[in-house]
Length: 295
Length: 85
Image 1 (cartoon, rainbow over the protein chains, first blue to last red):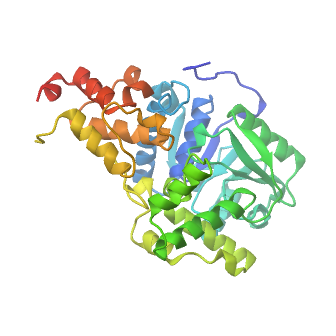
Image 2: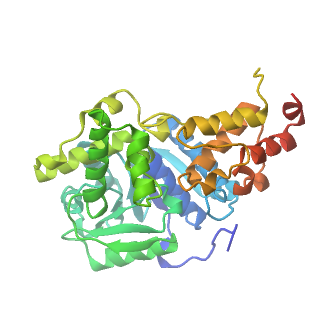
Image 3: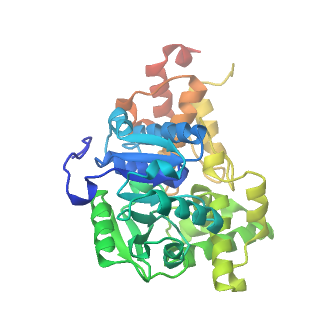
């Protein structure tokens, strides 16, 4: 199958899929869908974000083989992606994957719009690392059709996701989502709806504590990551991971956990706040805990 | 323009990212154990920007980016004038 777009169509991938939010995750989800033969409409707030997103899809698709993935035809992948400004652009989609900022007010507004413009049968997939799915379902008129999927970054390269039904999510919605994920080449790990799920309850505390080590001057970022790579055998340390995910996204996720559990163990490290304010967001901004070459 | 050869510039860039490692021009950086494929993507961007070349898809293989020597040879294939400078 190397180098070939999958043209087989079955059930779940017959339709146009909406991808809301064209940041790091939205770009990855759109590319993953397109390279597995799905037609996508990628939605964000303005044209500039969307044109940058398409450039990112082209760049990442080109790098696919170098990153250990299949060799892909950039033009074929891009031909499956159209763009639209505003959530109304997803009105004709049967399934929408939402990837906006991990900020409740932002997500709430997006879901209120989607609920108003999409047909009653449209499934809403919440791509979140922390926000409770049942809470998202509660601001729509279709909590049975709202489900969480926590995609990992870079999306096309990661073999598994967390799959999180909310309290009211129907079995039909679960199956439909599982089928789509399978068609995207993803294994689903089932998790009950609990803020942060498995991954972020553990990862965000680790990254936050690693940031505290740097903040307090106990060790520099290289030393923190070196312990995880060389002593624990992790492919990446927590601060490299923070740069990959986005320092701003890490901060939002820790804040969501802090707010949800009202537990001081999730207090965000001031360094994460300062880096976020300073625009030091990691790989995507060229600098975070480390400095990166950008094109 | 820089007085350094393509190989020296590439090596400086790699060493700048991994200051704690001892890396020479023939060191396979992906064999060090802590360099992942994301860095390969950065190397592509660095090489294209620094030497003003576009690496064709068939050359986007990890083997072309394992060592500073391999990357300098790639640059030489794509842009003989840079390599000779």
